[in-house]
Image (cartoon, rainbow, N blue to C red; front, side, top):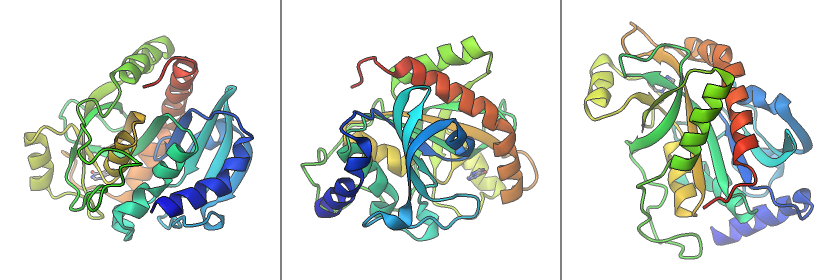
Length: 274
Ligand code: HPA
């Protein structure tokens, strides 16, 4: 694994031209269109990067972008790898390892999620304050690579309180209402049964989705600061959930999600990161 990370990052490193790129973005639902906000200097299809898995899910293009948002240097993944697609947890989280190897300090992730908090409505944006890991596999299972992070990483502030606060201020400045809540991550790909949605609420979830948790665990293992944003694309109380509904709600929420993340990046940049 260390070898693979080294080879992928050696391939991508020249694209950074020796400049620090402190922010890494995983453009999930809600942020796919942030691609247009990035002044891209390099766009590399995943297939061209050594050791990279290739993204297959409908609605997710797979490319690695190096560029700037409002003058701030960023690396962005357009399209991510989901566990339900059949990738191993090591594959799902590999790009985060590569980002870290390239010097990324802060990871910004978005996703689509079903709202199980009864106050939430379709189209809401939820700043993730914490997560519950319900995946059947753990990305850190197996021999620990001490060079990458500790055997038993703590997860007390997996989602940076500093960035949660900055996002709150950004939301107020831009007049974008924000929810806050706990993201329960499970493998999918079936949506939850009504009993499962109720269970997720009971155990403390506000929203549920099929991504983000593995990437954030690995980012924290690697000592990165994390920020997560969920687009509530459907409500657990509505009769049925389908992929089209999720995508449509994601599209509608996108301008707000992008505006918020741009403002967040503007304000996080230049401040000390952990
Ligand atoms: N459940 C799981 N994942 C999801 C959902 C959901 O209801 N909506 C969007 N992603």
